[in-house]
Structures are given as structure tokens and as C-alpha cells.
Length: 460
Image 1 (cartoon, rainbow, N blue to C red):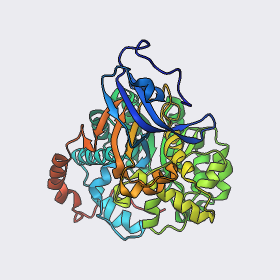
Image 2 (image 1 turned 90 degrees about the vertical axis):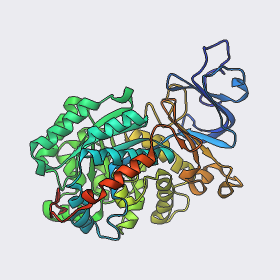
Image 3 (image 1 turned 30 degrees about the vertical axis):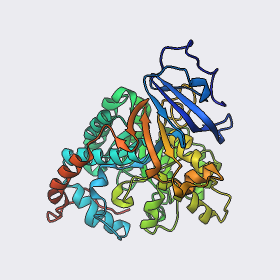
Image 4 (image 1 turned 90 degrees about the horizontal axis):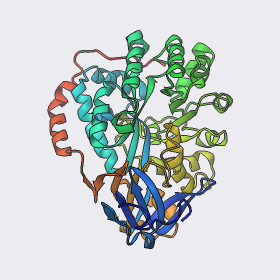
């Protein structure tokens, strides 16, 4: 096997924690090209992948738990690189609206009603949806994030969390974001990483952005921010200030920190040298389904970013705009939209799309050294995908089958840090019916817009 040390034997070790056997394993070679090893096995010990080897090599190896992976593909868990998980509570509330009306008339008035309990319940429902869809890690940018962190700790998923803030909140918004990041960094046994989370250049002024960059460098924290979300934002920024949103990030020092930019469909050619030469680690998260719903004329320039070495991770955004947290769909849409926008059917290939879904997404959230590939020493975040259904047969090109034929519902088992969170489609750490009942009881108060308040104005 490409990524494995010598095959394990019963004499070498005490019993493994988990062995997945008989599966096909998605692997990456030394040039980070994706490939597949058939009739393989994955051995997990102490929350990490110990080896990827042959099924025959582990026949007599003792294990606390074994999973028969025949007919399934074992691959790294998917990463949702930008979402607002609790917004599943607003799924379908604001439909068929332009961006400005969506924010000002519906979403921000409703969000002014949010309580910590609403956020907790929304996070529970979102984590259940993501685990069932093969997502083992998500990057969240929202409010009342202590509640989200508690849900993450309880249900076993991995998360990269940031407390969002606007300049309209005053200095306390930025301070709260920092306090959250420092308090929860390394939480849930290391499954929680954190970021500072200014909302966007059009809602956070230069003073706050500069202060955020300084705090990020001082405390070794990354920054997660919306920027150049769409072309309108870029054009308005140019008209009002003479510079693009990406140039605002450069001017305020944010590109000297590690930064995850959400969306970036308004990134221009003039922005690319700034992103390429940034002294911090820069990544972009793309959530194509929402861009189609809002009828934005451009999409994330994945190819241009790829060419300058900026990783592009896959995302869904919040379910209020996207209606789902299905990263599997984001992978397929990214590949299809890139073919259409570049006019080149050879870009993105299925194997390239799988690379975005695995290693590039791990790098986007700052976890490229621990996640994204199944090889010894990496965290055991693993999903098993069942390809025995009629919609995935016959298999002529396994990569194409995974990207363009398989669905999130084909994920049978989801594992994080070696712990099984879903087995044979059964969630083991979350009670969905109870969450749905309680969330339903809270809907009237949450959806009330008669007060006329909103937490912010959308004026790019």
C-alpha cells in the first residue's frame, strides 16, 4: 500500500481500536494525486490512522472494533469550510430574494431574536445533518458560539469556530470574538480550533480590521471573514473607496495573518498578486449552490486561485441561503460550474474535485497537517461510502462515480478521531426527533419580525 509502513501483525501491537477491512481506500501519493487501493484495510489506534494496508494483512490482527467495508470506499471525512450551522433553523424562510432584501427584510430581523437556546438547537440539527452527509469537520462563523462549542464537544464532530462581530457592536464585539477564540482553542480534546471572526469589510471598519490583524498575530490565531462575496460588493468598494475588498484586507494587515476568505466570487485579477504574495496563509471557501440561488453573475475563481497556490475549500454557507449542508453536492457543483465558467471540460476533473474536498479543504481550515488524507499519523476522520446502489453502478471510473453519481445519503458510516458517530446510517450521538420537536416549539418567537429591529444593515 502506498502510504503504509510495514504491514501490522498480531505480534507487533496490542489490539487496535478499530479496523476497517475489505474496502477500497482513497489515497494520495507523494505528488498529492488521488488514487485508490482495493481490498484494503485501515487500522486505527489512539484516534489516528496507524496504517493503510491489505485486507489479508489484518485478518488475524486483534481489534476492539471491526467494520466490514466490502462494497464501500473509505475516504477522509469531508470538511465544510464555511457555514453558519445554527441557521438551519431558518431553512426556507427567505426564498427567491435578492441579497439585500434577503438580509435586511428577513434574515437580520429574525437573527435579532436569537437566543443561546435557539443557537444550540440549530447547531444540534446541523451537526446531525453534516454527520449523516459525511462531514467530519466544519468551519462556523456565527453568534452565541459557546453553545455551538458545547454541541461539538458533546456530539463528537470536529469544528473550527469563530464568534462573529460587527463594528456596530463597538469594541466589545471584537473583544468577545477574541475571548471566545482563546477560551475554546484546543477544546473538546483537540477537536475544536478557533478563529477571530469579523463579519466582512463592509460591516467591520478599517480600525477594527487592523486591530483584528494585530490580535491574530499576537495570539497566533487565524481569521475567518467574508470578503469579495460577490461582484457587486467589489464594485461598490471600488466606487466608494477606490480599492477592492481584498485590497482592504491587505491594507489593514489581515493578509499578514492566516485568513480564510468566505466566497470570493468578487475577486478580481488585480487581487491575485496580493493573495499570492501574502505573508500569512490565505485560503478561500467556495459555496456554489448559494451563488446560483442569488443569481450572482460570477463564481469563485477556483482555477486562478489554484494557479497561484491558494487552496480552495468546499463549503455550503448557511442553510438559510443554501437550504442544505451537503458538501457532497458542493463538490459536484464546483466541478460542474468550473467546467462551464472556464469553457474547459477537462477542468475540474473528478480527481481534482476529490482533492479539493479532502486535502485542500483541510488546508483551508488550517488542518492540512492532520486531516485530509488517510495515511499513518493523520487523525482518523473517516467516512465509508456505499457504492452498491443502482445509481452508482457500474463503476468505470471510481473518482467520477464518487463525484458525479454518489450522494451524501450513500455515506454509511462516519468516524471522527476514531470514534464512530454514525454506523449504517444510524446516528449514535444526537437525538434528532427531540431536537426537531423543541426547535419547532420555539419557531413562532424566533420568526417574529413585527418588532422592526435588525442586527445590521446590508449596505455594501
